[in-house]
Length: 386
Image (cartoon, rainbow, N blue to C red):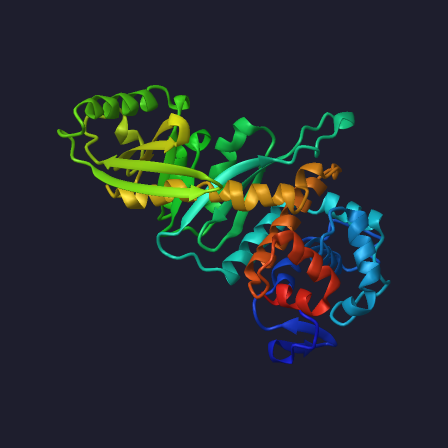
């Protein structure tokens, strides 16, 4: 995907520039072309231009086409472009028809080629609705994307679409089965606290930490009652591990107390949760007597510091992914609605975000890095070469 200036990393074959190292082009050129006829433009050219454009602040198919026209001479250095730059309608028509499962699976294979998850890395899974992707005229609701976020690497490693928020419990196992997560710790909020999801994670060679709420029948109430009873005795009759953190920022201080125990022989139905080993109580104390207590279950050992790290890391998917998609990529403002286009454009945003975050020589916000990539071809090359 790099222009032929980078001669150490490219080879030439039949007049085409190819990359020796794993690249976008290598992993996306196998996607099935949905067009039966009128193939004036190569599919991989359309995909590559779109990725470059979204990196450079394009938020619509019209933006992508204008980017292509502005960068035509630069793009010709490494793309064929037999009939020039496609129109905005062509970009939209192609992405509306590309098989989203093929596109997402190619994304996952690309990530697996360029990024290796370390043992114990936190992989957080959560969903986000693209609010303006609905199409009232066709009775189509807004799409809801469930994403997997590798906290230490700071990148998206996979995603699946679900029609409604409640259907996350069916989308999450599908996503997990596509990922390489052996040795990782998967964190999911209460919506995904399901026995079959726990089994899927363990079967993939990973561990889990789930938030508890009222959606699991008596499980939350039993764990809450257990900790409350021992709290009355200052936990003197409970074998537990303890960890405390103190965070301050923006004039606020938050103290967190993590207590974990593997004394769960009393817990009814624990055998239905594969490898369930530990339960956890987290007490958060903020200024002005603002207190909150929450509860978790997990397959990791009785280690309050490790458990606390997993719980705390889970919020990275909100702060570093969902917030960035809304603020820097204006995802919630997107009016892309036609057929598969909203889902495929969401994947384009994930690709762009990953590539921008992997480029670390410029210490600026995601928004400014996108703008700079659009202005400076040399910097765009740095982003593309990752």
